[in-house]
Image 1 (cartoon, rainbow, N blue to C red):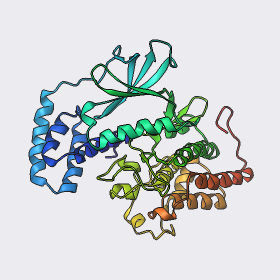
Image 2: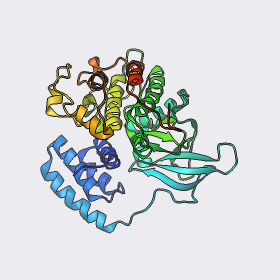
Image 3: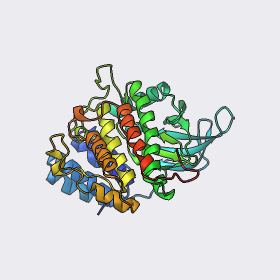
Image 4: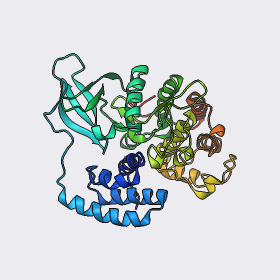
Length: 374
């Protein structure tokens, strides 16, 4: 059964939280996480099981979780009408075991009326999580770009929960936006180029996002891209060394780069790999899955994406010129190379390749829909 990106997000978060603690504390962490979905808990258990080879322990853990869940009543982290500083909660935008993001309104007029407030659970502010939270605040202060959500400030609730106030973005994940607006290939590429601009700005400020995925790339009604969620981002020095020590997996499994999955150091090249996966999704409507053949790839890309042209034709019900298909295929192969050194040098390089590709559309009789990007 195919798991949704949201489900994988929750699995990833729980898995990472457990990795920050000794094995004997996993029982308490999972039982107290607030997660009620047995499928998610089962996946987390299997991941930890494979990681630690603790089969006997997980047999008892699974039974304990099932018992604990039967005794628990679901509760929201925050509810409508609650106050976070001078902001009144309107509704939840998203929630996970470690944080909640809420639509809120300012009660004193000092901010835009509507904002997004990210509230962090105290139980998640120990060790690496605490460091990541401080890094996220620093990152948001450093970046200012029209394609990245604005940062407004931080604070602490009366109960002691730290929070970050950001621009509220009303929009759709980039893949859903493309589908619901029935964008053609040309306009999907133009939209994607905006993501390159946002990511390059982050990289210029020595920031590696580490969680590039459709859910973190929203498109507003006027077709503007907004890159969100720097919660697990890292800051690098001029030599590319990360501020985050890689002690286990961090990110979204379905979009993670090979080095993330292996627990190796992440760099701007890791973001490029994730950008490749997003590009593959929005132009074919399908997720590219890392395969055994992919792992054996030497960088040439000859045996990869064998169904790419067919998927493209099926998606748009037309055959594009062979040079355009080949160039797009080459961009995908390069961005998703197993070897980080063989990927695009930076987001600007990826953008440049795409802009050159877009020029080929001049001979394809492509017409841009009214009111769409570009």
